[in-house]
Image 1 (cartoon, helix red, strand yellow):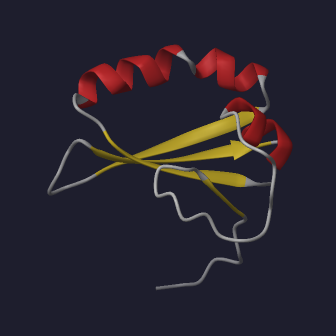
Image 2: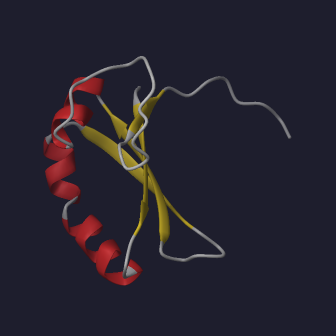
Length: 90
């Protein structure tokens, strides 16, 4: 399952959180299967989000991007598509 990793520094975490949660049904309707949020310890306005998508194309379309599973993106504000590898202990 493709995952999209999004990194942002927001002005107001609580406002961002509310918007993100309110948009859950929109993401689901476009093919999102779930999301995990991470917040910076030193900067609580720094956010990482991992969104599981049914296809890369649906995730890219949701964010208004061209679907691509390869290459690199030099813009740090663009989401990155990844796939999970086998887990390791420790």
